Image (cartoon, rainbow, N blue to C red; front, side):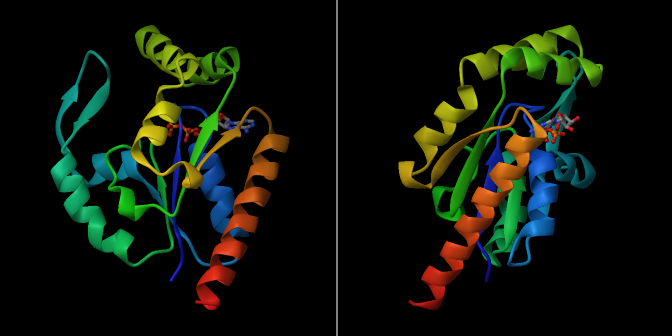
Length: 174
Ligand SMILES: Nc1ncnc2c1ncn2[C@@H]1O[C@H](COP(=O)(O)OP(=O)(O)OP(=O)(O)O)[C@@H](O)[C@H]1O
């Protein structure tokens, strides 16, 4: 059985880019779950908020549906929030960080409404997701990683792969 790795961070910090690379590089098979996409595709939401252009997630449904999948291990949970997931699910929580002006450019390229860019930009400055991760999981499993360049991305993947190798070794010797 593989580990459950949560990759979180403000929208645009590079969660999906990291998850995609990690699936390719991981020494154990991992399934990438882009939780936001699953919410949309599988209807795990209560409504679509026009003003914020986002879905109001049905958290009970999401947890019920994900529980048996996560229980099998070998999962990357890719989402901009992590406090919803039960603490027991995660073996590692990666919080991606990005300089806010760079993040602004990335979000502008996606044609996000200005209000949404501002909200996300502010959340990154206030390190909302990092605080959320620290409040929700034991400190030893929360790792903050910079995601501003492709060099950062490659270095981060290397670190996570090393962590998986150690995780596997620890399990084998138990
Ligand atoms: N470390 C990085 N170096 C260079 N470009 C990056 C890096 N991380 C992300 N990007 C770029 O930023 C954009 C957003 O990346 P990505 O879609 O992976 O972010 P995300 O956090 O998954 O966003 P969302 O939460 O909206 O799904 C993409 O164009 C991606 O190529």
